[in-house]
Image (cartoon, rainbow over all chains, first blue to last red; front, side, top):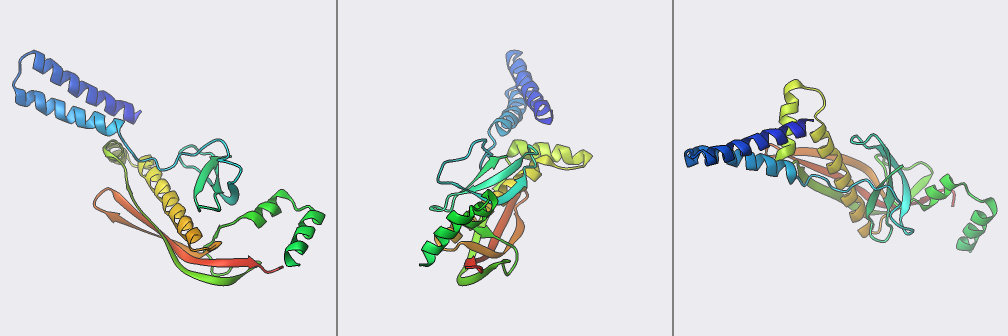
Amino acid sequence: LLRAALFLVGGILLAAAGCSAIAGCNLGIVLRLAIPGLVLMFGLLVERWRYKPVTIHRPGPDWVPTNERFIDPESGETVTVFYQPSTGERRYVAG
Amino acid sequence: LYCVSIRVTRRDFRLSSEELMELENPMLVVTTENVAGHRVTEVKGQCFGVVVRSRGLGGNIMAGLRSIVGGEIDEYTQLLEEARRHAVDRLVRNATAMGANAVLMMRFDSAEIGQTMSEIVAYGTAAVIECEAA
C-alpha cells in the first residue's frame, strides 16, 4: 500500500511536470517537478535488494537437504536449506 | 574393512530418513565449541563470510515513512535477513573450499557503513569432525 502511494506521488509529480510544460511554464518549474518524480519512480521500479529467492522445488538430485530450517519473515513459510557438496553453494527451498 | 562395515550396518539396520539426513549432512554450522556425539579431527583455521548490503532508494523512502508511525520496519527486516543468508552462504562456501565439514563457534558481527548500508560478518572455525560412535 505504501509502495502504491509512493508510485501515485511520483505519477502526480510527472503529470504536473507534463501539464506545466504544456501550459508553457518556466523550465525551472518543470524540472523541479519532473526530476523528483523520475527519481522516485526509478527508485521504486529498480531496486536490487533481493539476494536469492526462496524456490518451491528441490534444486537438483545432487543437492543435499540440511537440518537448517527457518521461518522466512517475508512470507511466513518454513524454509529448508539445501547444500551442494561439490561447490559449497546453498539454496533456500520452501517447505 | 571400516567402509565395508559401515555399508553393512546401514543396509542391515535401515536408518530412518532423519538419521540418514544427519549422516549425509555435509556441512554443520554450530555456535558451540564442541559438537555432541562428534570429535574434531582437524582444525582448518578461521573462516569468514562478509557482505555489505543496502536497500534501494524506494525501499529507504518507504522505511523512512514507516518509521514515522513506528513498529517493525519490514524493508530493513528483509534487508538484514537477506544479508544474514548471504554472509552464511559465503562462510559455508569458504569452509567447503578449505576442505572442512563443519564450522564451529560461528558468530555474527554487524556494523553500519554510511547511513543506509549494513555490513554483516559471519565467522567461525572451519574444522573436520567425525562421529564418535565410529
